[in-house]
Image 1 (spheres, helix red, strand yellow):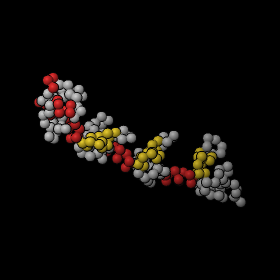
Image 2 (image 1 turned 45 degrees about the horizontal axis):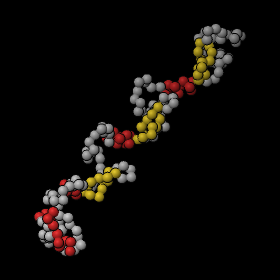
Image 3 (image 1 turned 180 degrees about the horizontal axis):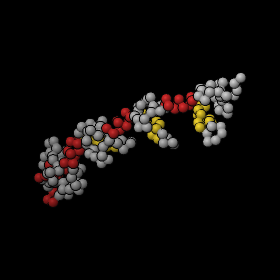
Length: 204
């Protein structure tokens, strides 16, 4: 009878008739040990290694590849780094940031530049500040103000200045007696008022 503990030198490594699993774990990959037994469990199972191989990709690849990356960010939102330096939603959308960039202008710029300002004020109307300090229509027009300025003169000025005074109605020359008869006392040299002074008073 042949010795049952003996077998052919060359035989199948996975032959259960010739080998036992020993201390190896089912499903674990096997690596060569440095003593006895000659084979020991590897750190990973075959399934874990298969999953890693399936998920592998080139180290340098497109960051926008959906097959390689996922994200909780909202479509259209700008991104900022979270506490771990990973991209998450920022406050504004791309559209909002784009609008802000379009509206950007120099801090110091022309106040009459219509590309930067709008106004409800009326053309030709003078302006005043509203409750918020913003310019709105005042009562008068520029033409009215210009006319008032043109007509202005010193508060104290000559009563006979033709540039500042004109006669009214049927102003005629009167003598002092006529005014005194009407109860108006005039102290004029000679008792008679003529010329410009006379034209300043209406007929009584």
